[in-house]
Image 1 (cartoon, chains in turn yellow, brown):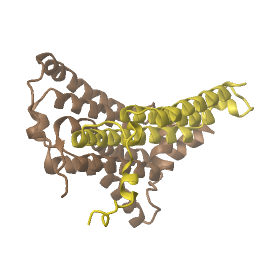
Image 2 (cartoon, helix red, strand yellow):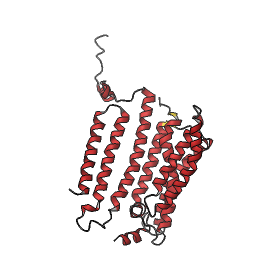
Image 3 (cartoon, chains in turn cyan, blue):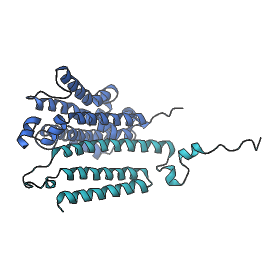
Image 4 (cartoon, each protein chain N blue to C red):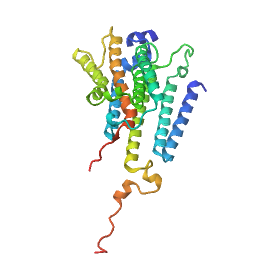
Amino acid sequence: MNTAMIYSLVAVALFGIGLFGALVLAHLVRKVLALNVMGTGVFMLLVAMAHPSRTQSAPEETLPDPVPHALVLTGIVVAVSATALALALICRLHAATGRTTFPEDRGEPSAGEECSRPEPDRERSG
Amino acid sequence: MREEFVAAGGVENPVTGVLLNFRAYDTFLEVAVLVLAAMGVQAVWRQDWFAAAPLAPPPLLVALAAAVVPVVVLVAGYLLWIGADRPGGAFQAGAALGGGGVLLLLAGMPVARWFHGLKLHFALILGLATFAIVGVGMIVAGRRFLEYPAGSAKAWILGIEAAAMLSVGAIFVVLLAGVLSGRPGRDRQ
């Protein structure tokens, strides 16, 4: 069990925790935070892939692979901008409806179910 | 092996070499994603810096902003320059600038109100435009897209990074503080 393997296992655990949170938590901001935790798990996995202990040859003086590090840097920037956009959308939803949860998490029918519900029978009253 | 990498990349830091030279196309698309996110936030939440003077900001915050923001600008410039040798570069410097800009907005500084409209849009698009112009210019000069001339790679990288730093700073201000100072966009009827 070398260093890279430990990092990878922790990364997978982070991803699992984030996925659980994204599905289970009701408040939208908490969902966004859970998605960020998932992203952090993915980045950690990428950095673990770059760790020099993955190759068995000359582990002391080998430097880490720079390409996954560059991918992680790009990923962090994209995750930050996506989080900012998600938070702006949540603010807009709150300004428009006053809610910060999805209808499904409140027990109400979702927008899709509302649209596909069959029309009430009008001929009976006419 | 590291010496060949550094010589081929043109900069000392191998990660910067990968980001800005070998995989410059990925960084170009990353800046495009940032611009898209800024456009998304502006579409959803209109920024009207002038209308954003709701409460008198606390005097301590104003003093903090006046003291910290020049240091932030210095730090951003340092991060940009040191990115060639150590961890740093355009996005880290842009993030520092964005933080300084948000602090200016929160403190209600008049300089934040100057930065709106056409000037804001120009700053948002500057990094992406520089990247695209350099890339297409390389095609016009007979190379491939974003393939720098061998000797002067560091100069090209630094030029693109400087434009990207300004752009990323403006984008982060829009992303982070746009919601603070705007009002919801109009609903279409």
